Length: 289
Image (cartoon, rainbow, N blue to C red; front, top):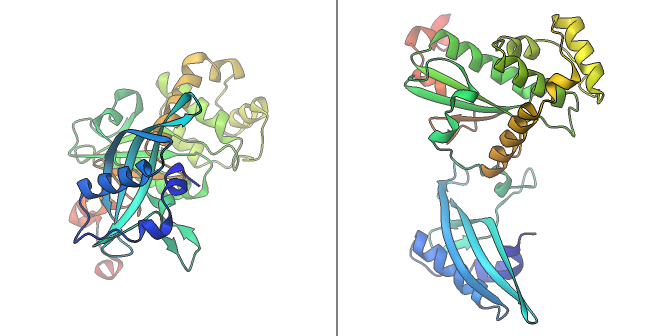
């Protein structure tokens, strides 16, 4: 449970009497709740982002950063934390649960990104001056990524003036241990001018449970003819790029892959680009029959 939820009771959270919660109202509400604890000093509360929820209709999510000091005897511990509150009309709630899936809606909130994510190091296909920007955080062995990401490769290659694709690594080691050395191999190969290798890796089956990097690279050589050593994929700059990608994913509150962003906004359905395709490329099934 987050610090905010420990400090603000659910009953208090649901009692906010407002005609409609504004950003100032949310900040005041959080400050009042935190300051009600005499051991806490509030230094800053700010709204990081506000998002309208598709479901349930009418609700908004506020991503909030707050910095506080907690006094313990003669000492003070400073804490900075990010949390999420949900508002609708005159009500605010610390979380919303889907009664059918038993899942928290907090886990579905992902922040928008800024133009710093459109950097040359992560540019893969399409013109950097393209009208629309697509950013994806992906795991090369994630089955959902293997469905979605190759389509993003294709659309950026076929329509370079429309779409620029930027690729970030987020291998999920707990699910696909072999994705770690493969992600590092992709980083190394792309830097050496072989960005096409990433498409081949996405289309090739690997033993995703393999934890031995040397064996993963042997499989890469056997199946794709790509010869790399563990020393190459563990060069400091390779390891650093992977770590930075992970940090950027955490900053955006990404919890799973593939995480797709279209023109800066999180694209939960991963297909926002489709409505911008030329009409002959975007026909429905009924239109093509």
